[in-house]
Amino acid sequence: MLEGSRIGQLFDAASRIVARKRMIIAKSQSDLEKMRAVGELIAEVREALRRMIEPGITTLELNNAAEKMMRDAGAIPTFIGYKPRGMVPFPFAICASVNEQIVHGFSTDKPLREGDILSIDMAATYQGFVGDTATTVPVGKIRDDLAQLIRVTEECLELAIEQCYPNNRVGDIGWAVQQHAEKYGYGIVRDYTGHGIGRSMHEAPQIPNYGRKGTREKIRVGYCFAIEPMLNLGTAETKTLDDGWTVVTSDGKASAHCEHTLAVTPAGPEILTLSKNQKAALNAAKAENASALLESAAKKG
Ligand code: MG
Image (cartoon, rainbow, N blue to C red; front, side):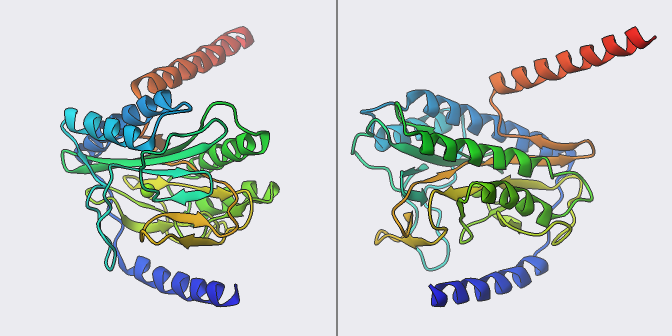
């Protein structure tokens, strides 16, 4: 709608001005150690939930399991009671968004059904720092177009993370998401963005999932970002349900969402929200790569 997009443009312009005025906080080495700890903690919760998802389970069961895992680990579920100005406090430990729900879905006692897709988003606070992550999971067997939507959303996240080198720009991140998502004709959600993260869940800068290369803030060592593409099978337009939180696609078509928290190091992006197993697999792949390089160097003499 014209009215909606006009308001969107005004909001974009206003938030750019606000974002410019807010400082981006570079993390110290000791801050980064805590970001690593909370990142791994929330990644373990995410992977445990992924393993639980099957037809018949309810999002309330997933929510309760997530809250218990976080509290047992000594962490606080960051989402519970989260209250942006003018909104009611968010009541759950996770956002559970089914099918056409994009983000901020409420957990319910309605069982998930074969063929659904479920986006779960969660954050924990531990030792004063926040880790934030999301994933979209198929419930049993799903349609091919939904599987592709999830795959491309994950690819967009990977491409976006690859932009997070010192001296690149925040606009490069959105550009990477946009150019890949548009190849598939997906609607890119513009009303919600990624963000800086640290002692607060939402720090500067805002990280939109669209943009132009070489624009916006310069990326520097020590910055921590939560990058979170949200792609829709149909329109990018969103609306919010009467509960004040749940965001859905305005055409009722499905949406996918994935998110990692990362740190910018001198050598490039370090994904903080990987589980122990995922880190071990990544390190094994790196070691294999390194030994292959050494071997070919040795052959060349
Ligand atoms: Mg986030």
